Length: 255
Image (cartoon, rainbow, N blue to C red):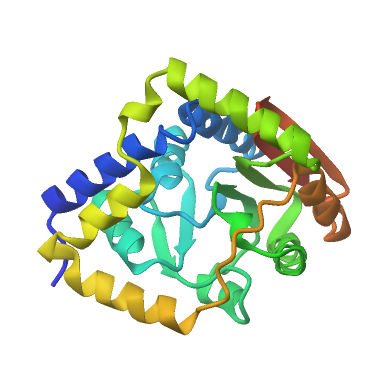
């Protein structure tokens, strides 16, 4: 039995609010990603976009609003977030249940034509360096010439001292903006798990997590590491287009 719109709206709205706790400039980062995509697909009548690690559809919904003629395919491995996305933002994208970077995941997308852009926000940091290189290479194969991969995330600096500094500045900005008044990530998940409408999805989520024990470490590579991997994967032109502290939007262009 599917979720009601009211249930999905409640949990997606709470998700949006709690995410502001960790990214004060989250909305601007979304806008910058859409700016990049809009520029790249300017001559495309019906661009094909891929949203990697779409969660409850936050970025897909904003891209669909900005680019109403786009076809958006959104992929995630979390059954709770995917069902929330399908119910709350069902018109924004076609949602695919797959694990990014694992064997066969690109085939599950069922694209049918080359991508114009692949986008992601705060989703690829759980991939190891080897998995990232493989994933960026797969994206390069899926994209048309001139297409882009756009990765918005928190990229810590390479050195520990600078990483501590950017983390401190980020906490100070969040406190000044009042973002810490929002519930945190753990509280959102604990609360959602108590909703009887989501019980069956959390059972599926737990089974999948048990099957993937040891495969979900968060690596959080530096932006320069991502850029290096993009270049090795075939994106010869790579540049940050926006940055506030350690929050950055990194773009790779397929030659």
